[in-house]
Image (cartoon, rainbow, N blue to C red; front, side, top):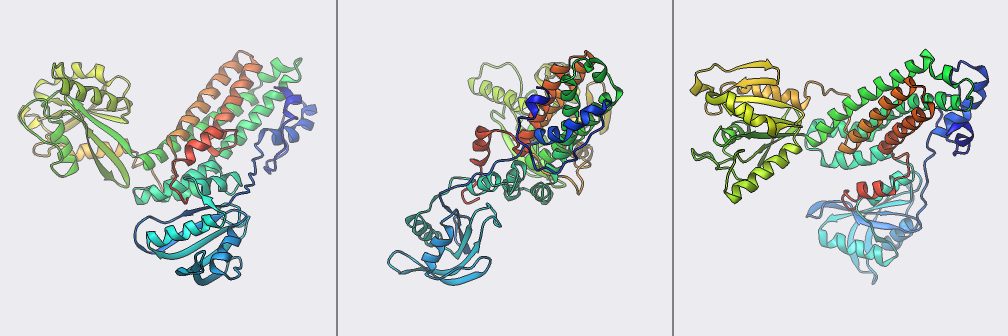
Length: 491
């Protein structure tokens, strides 16, 4: 890319430092423009239409809210109440239809842009929470020039008008759908910008590294020595460390948000369903002496210290001519492909053979716990042992022996002990972006060792671009559409 290309990029009001230490003093004059060039300037999106949606649940309630956003929001609200509405003051009155008949009594609150959730003029009409009345009120707003909002469009406008970055916008939906107190706290921290701030910290180090290398590329007579400096290697290792730490924290945040996907797998009749029932604390799965009773996947969610663990009981893995059972086995393999943890259940009376038969099916599963069930029948005590292929636990699903140890291993798999008061929520796409950013850093290091400055610069650009996907500092119309379409209407 080089300095001449970089200086063509739009400057940015990031507030980042304008200087960076270089071995050659004549590089310093380029640093301010380069630092600004590397940082995304954002993009304002001025809308000419006004949107409306019911922002509360479509069920009877004490209060229901209609939300308007856009240039006509204020005027529409004044027409409906037939009175002047002042910003940030509550206006009580009747909401009237097109014939001046009362729809309901309620209040209107006007937030003038840019000091609002979306950055535009926003009005909230609060009425009684009767779905019929709210639909009438929404239809009146549409008749006065508003249009029905798309799912997530209010938060999308907040992002486009720079009230939130993309990670914060996603945290809004995460906060609404949080399944535990810990998940809600983590989503709140992401909404407050803690995750974004961590991303920006890593991004700043990456930008400095890019500037360092790009400057060298415009001085080819010094490039080889410049790229071999210990300072450069030190900077790269620091960014790699920060990236790795952020990835670990994002993975913990993802577990808080999505929970842990645990698949119970094994041959028929080894006690998989009994294991599920014991962990769930109730008879969720049918248990019989007949092999092959389970023919489909059965899911049960349990919560351990605020982290949701989804247990999936699957059909026994074996060769069979039964078409229904074959389909169940296919589904078991699909579940394993998505598993965070596999509970490989074996009959302790025939453990060695069972382990050999299961190993091939478990290829690619990130973590495996080998559960030697029916230890009460094999006369083995409940115990744990770390072997070359992972932890082995001896237990009995029938009488509960060894289950305290299993629950502790599930706690470890869920990362409960790692989750602290500073955890933030993260999504699968955030983790995937960080994985790609980390991989590009590794490749950049390899290229620097080989004195391939242009290739190293490209890898650093790729890493920077992957980070930008998290907060939205990139051109990603398709990505935005996919994310905000998952929001509820009115948010």
